[in-house]
Length: 468
Image 1 (cartoon, one colour):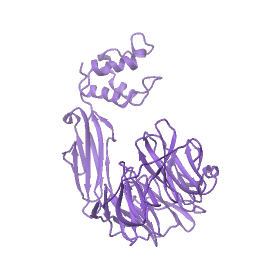
Image 2 (cartoon, helix red, strand yellow):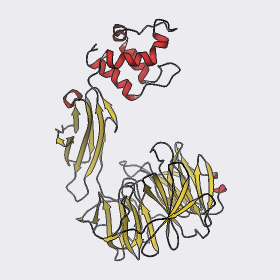
Image 3 (cartoon, one colour):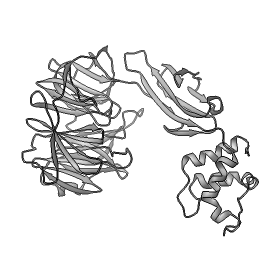
Image 4 (cartoon, one colour):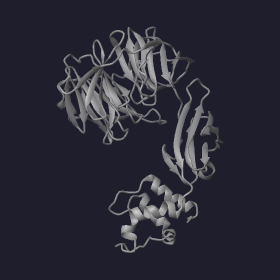
């Protein structure tokens, strides 16, 4: 590794053998398109891109009666290694180059020109804070690149990367990168001061393959057998002989095709046998963000471990002041259960929904859990929404301090603004305009907008009757 990268060595990982087998699961099988494909890309937005007769087609398998859209020619793309969202578009990194998919147009990207050879593998790591764009890593046969803000920084290893494989991992400091070499796995991360460091995992033999999922689990194939490495750094033998390991950093599910041709699915912390999934490990295969496995043979087939279910309403982390309805979209007539803080709550029908009254819930943090179960062998769908209820706000303790900090300079007795807002009565008279202005960030003028919590306090004061 280049000068400036500090190398350390991990202590030997404890190894144990266990199969947390959960019996059989029966994913929903559907023929997506009546064609095979040499190019099969599962995009972050849920669509797929396939190759047909020299053309690239984009298709949404979730949309009823959808027709594929031609987005460009299928020329010299090669094997696709990653597809990552960037600036309203999707960057596709393949052995044949880099491409941008934007508004139904597939065009070459100049990023490939900054590399010293064809792409061997690529991966986007999330940012340490979970906000904004993370680090994009690209491996060529001789170099490892870290792309930040469109600039490619080259990190040189002392050995060939021709057969390298990249996977996401997680450390206490944040996201990390695994690099599989011929005889070991390197881990690369940024410490809390921002310095890039590297370490080598001590494994029981040379790694055959690696992978990583959205839960932060690492997966390693050693001696042909599947192992997982969790946050505790234990190496766990899952008891499966592996012919193909399929993971995605966007998916919570992991697919394994074993040496006998059987299929396995790791989901919800459990390894399930999937007897209905019959694919050839040499086929073009891809795992989508929703955990679905796509297989391209005589036709393109989708195996979905979970049926469709979606909860619409206040997003995770919201502040609830007024009554809120969470709509539950499903297929058919599954069993729907909901709890608030572990206690069952009613699920209304036509349409399916959960209605919450902040006053009845009370002040503080709460969690809504919706569980949808289909009686067809697929896995349950669970959606969680954490939120905070604010119902008790007063002028003296909550709103007046906001006025003093953010409004008084302009709307006080000495302020330049025409409108005066120094009293409780003046706020009551103009509350709708005030809420509209602060919610949309127009006020405070020339200053940072109020936080979501500060806006919610004003709303709670209004809903509560403008308490003194």
